[in-house]
Each structure stands twice: as structure tokens, then as C-alpha cells.
Image (cartoon, rainbow, N blue to C red; front, side, top):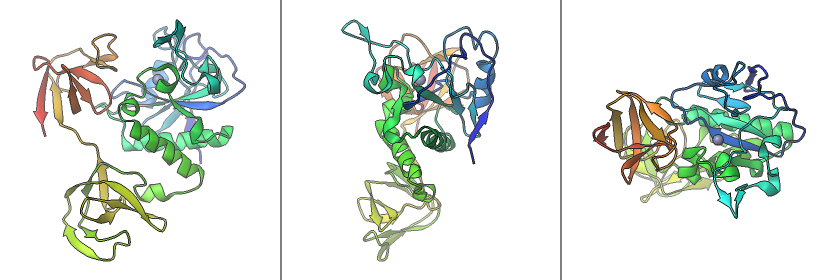
Amino acid sequence: MSQIKNNYVVVNQFSRPGLKRSVTKGIIVHYTANPGASAANHASFFDGKDGGGSRYASAHLFVDAKEALCIVPLNELTYQANDVQKYVKGKAYRGAAAELGQNANWTTVGVEMCLEKNGSISTETFNRTVDVVVELCKKYGLNQHDLYRHYDVTAKNCPAPFVARPSDWTRFKNEVARKLKGDTTSDKFYTYTPNRVVTLREIGLYEDVTLKKTIKRYPEGTRLTITGIEYDGKTPRLKTAKGYITANKKNVKGYHTSIGTIKVLVNDLNYYDTARWTNPNGQVNKGEVFTVVKKVGNMYLLKSGLYITASSKYVKFTAH
Ligand SMILES: [Zn+2]
């Protein structure tokens, strides 16, 4: 069954110029850099004569934790990946020109991942985007090697979480590859190495991948560092410094390490998609709370990959 619901915006010069595309050589993955705005919010934003603020910008699909909306027909062009972010020898940087041509808007489908209120890409959104991309790969005869981050094409910091943590992008492509092969192992088990997990019930620590000889038991709520993944036949197991544990998602849940949270103290506080104070991506308001991954100069890098001031005048930091 298709994950994708069509919810087309009207033809307009900015978000849906109505230009027909004839060839699809790749899929470009983006994020909205717009915490708390859903797929439906974006569908209505880009609709209308001004196409969302009279800016030449859009994408075909918007995915959130609930649904995947196609707002521009796939055989039409969207303004998603021909921006100029840097120059090389006086020419606009085009990272995948050999594969996609000088203007990737003509040859690709653009998929935007929406952000939760706290600025993160939820597991549901990640998984649904994998499913949407699998569907598009099947439609166009593509595979995991035909996937690009917006960053790979024009050097834009997008999707910021996949630029900040390239391992998440690798994991995304691996999940697509597995699903294209019809392997559903990843629905039930971790098939990549989550850096840290918390146990969801009592589990055992075992001597080897067969999980036969118990070393000890961990109670529910134990936090463990994972060092790798190994297989017992086709079944993945997680490795720790002391032994092996289950990779079943019913038993353990992965989480990203973070140093704490911030609470915003003022209204209209800018956030940025790079650790520089230019071109803010948007504003957050008093009382909003975000997870902090690390401090970079005088800014905090948030779990979403976005940056915000670290000044105690504007945000209150609480360490874990
Ligand atoms: Zn983008």
C-alpha cells in the first residue's frame, strides 16, 4: 500500500511552476528546518498564488510522524536543489553534476522530513521517509546509490542532522537498501549500531552471539553503550564491551547522547543551520525546550542539527 497521499498545491510560479520533468535520476532528501510544522502545515503554506511567501522554493513530498503528503506531482519540477551555497573557481558548486546534471531540479524528486517541536526528526518520520523513498526507488528503478542529501548537491546544510551525523545518513540509505531487497529484519531488530540503548525490560548479557550463556541480567531502564553489531545467522545482536545483548526493538531502545536541555527565555530568538550568526533559519519562543548535543563556541548544537545562542541571557541550560 502506498504511504503517499496526494495533496497538490495550485499551480503558481513559486512552489509549483507546472514545468514537466521527463527523467528521474535521483532522490534528494531534505529537512524543513522548521520545528513543529507538520506535513499538512507545509502543504497549506506552499499553496496559493504566492506559493508560500513568493519565494522560489518547494519540494514534492513532506513527511512527518503521521503522514507523507505529495504537494507537487512527481512529474513536475520543484525548486528544491539548485540553490547557490558556495562557489568553486567562480562557479556554483554542484556536487553531483555528473549524475544529476547542472540543475538537479529537472532530474530528481525532493523529499522533506518535518521536525518535531523539539527540533528532532522522530523515529516515525525517519522510518516513514525510508518507506517513501523505497516506494520512489521502485517507481523509478533507482536504489540506495541514487539517494542524495541536499548537502551533497549544493553544499547546503540540509538535512542538518544528517550533515552533523553522517552515520545517520548511512543508516538511512542502508535501511532503504534492505527494504528494497524485501528484508524486513529492520522492522523488528536494530540493524545498525545505536550508540546507546536503554533496556525496556529485564534482559541478559551473554558470552557470544548465540545468546546462550548468560553472564548477568540487566534490569529494565539500564543504559548501555553499544560498540558494534554482529549476526547469529540472520539475527542481529548488539555488542557491548562486556558481551552480547538482544537487538530486538521490543527489548532495547536506542537514543542519542546529549549533554542537557535548554529552555528559551525570550520570544523571537533566532536559530541557525550553521554555527555562524548569519541568515537565521527561524525563531523560537519563550518557554520552548530543546535537547542539546554539544556546545560549539558560543552556540549550542541542538539534536535537530540546528544552532542557537548559548548565552544565559537568552537560554537556560540544564545539564543531564
Ligand atoms: Zn534542503
